[in-house]
Length: 197
Image 1 (spheres, rainbow, N blue to C red):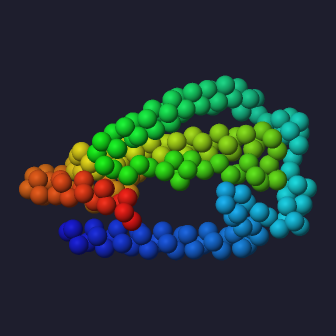
Image 2: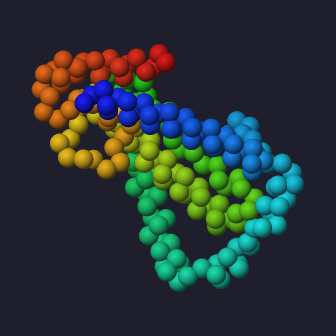
């Protein structure tokens, strides 16, 4: 059973590499390149993007009442997101140092670059920054908690977990008491080794 799981995990890794290659091809298709954190489009593409942009006033006039009413509820979520961002950052800087676990690089998860697209108006750019921040903080938090779980309780659940993190598949099976006792410290050591990679 474990061999089959390992085979499937390896297959997923190969598919993820293929997906990255397709993203690289997209960069070529849409004629942009990454320059550090900045995205550079070809001049003619950038000009075409600017011509397509819908100005703020016509964009607002075409918005539904539902969209307008939801604005305070959507943007008020930035408060708990920022609180989570701050607290998990403090948590990992204290606890991960104590456990000798490599810290999660926030900039790998909180990516805000869509505001650089010239075909978006100011409101759309702001929305893209908001969503990039929100989803990034959730992903960042998830990786911090996943490392914590690997350190303290690397055991799979008895029931299927929807959307489990990438570390979960390697955890010890539910009910495998001997496996847990034998591998518990290996999981911790594996975390510490990640920093050396």
